[in-house]
Amino acid sequence: MASDSSATLEERTDSPAESSDQESAVKTARRQLEDAAAHLDIDPNIVERLKHPTKVQEVTVPIERDDGTVEVFTGYRAQHDSVRGPYKGGLRYQPEVTRDECVGLSMWMTWKCAVMDLPFGGAKGGIAVDPKSLSEAERERLTRRFAEEIRHVIGPTRDIPAPDMGTDPQTMAWLMDAYSMQEGETIPGVVTGKPPVIGGSEGREAAPGRSVAIITRETVDYYSRDLTDTTVAIQGYGSVGANAARLLDDWGATVVAVSDVTGAIYDPAGLDPRSIPSHDEEPEAVMRQDVPETLTNDELLELDVDVLIPAAIGNVLTEDNAGAVEADIIIEGANGPITSAADDIFTRREIPVIPDILANAGGVTVSYFEWLQDINRRSWSLQRVNDELETEMLAAWSDVCDEYEARDVTWRDATYIVALSRITEAHEARGLWP
Ligand code: GLU
Image (cartoon, rainbow, N blue to C red):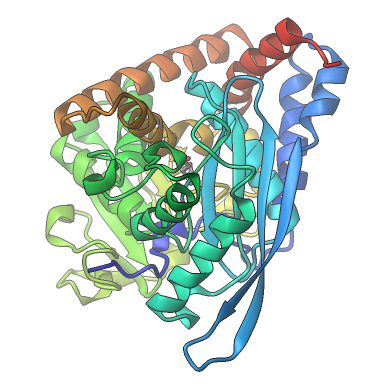
């Protein structure tokens, strides 16, 4: 049976939140690029090129609704940069999807793939639609028609979509099928995040949460703390939040608070994350747990804990609440949970922030493993996926630590410097065509 394609909490990353200092994803991405470039001796012409996407496909996606009427949606695929390899990034189905948002998010994918040293560039796309307003049959028709409209710009060596907000493995299965039928052969490598039965990778769904846990463990160790003496609060209990919570608990940390859209639960003695169903396992189960105390999501963000992991939506830490945060370390589990103004406040307050493009990069890293398995027609065990993910995360962490220690910069800038150095070196080597 096809799975429900409604967005889980952690997948609703980057969605606009009400905040006075909110800026569009493309503006934030451009500003972050300029900040990182200021620390590097790079050709300004390359920076200028990187401020713009290579191509943005805007398409009309008409579908027949179940009642026989036709409804027309708008879809996008933004391809930012492919100097290091095929474009790579998710597809989201969400009413707020715009061209600019896709461009900004495609830039973040370029940096994310480069930090992880994956041979991919960055892309992002989606359809401005509320997937929950469609039946499963309508979502399938929407996906197949969208696949047809973007067919000529995607492909296993061109641009490889993956799940994101409001899309899931079933969406990827329809996309792969539509593409393969038109090409006349089965081409699993055209998308990642598929169900394992058609070439998806073991461990792909849990990978972003696993990488968040690995980076949290390494950061805690970097600051000479013991994970067994560390308290953690996690906002968002979808697959990112729940997987991170469970692994950190396994490794000895004390997860004192978790939340979903309905609110937060708190136990200073520690919750048992394995007994709390994630959003995918049982939607909105967090507040149904029997625990000593409940809080609001806002109160969770202001708890006095060692580590705070915003793993729900974008723009939750803003200039309005950044001053009240009492955590010693912040790990970005969601994409873009901290606004620029809040980021400046954390820098001033000397609260280390480990950025999304490193912390949640386990998702695209296991997407890379999936792509390798597809093109080699060979599947890896879960153990192998997790071992290789651990190796890749530690390598990226070590590269970022080197930059952090060599320069007087934030963790975010250090991470961007690693990414940008790799991208600009590749641009310099390849030059401008023609
Ligand atoms: N949408 C995910 C992200 O934001 C994964 C992208 C991919 O696997 O290509 O990283």
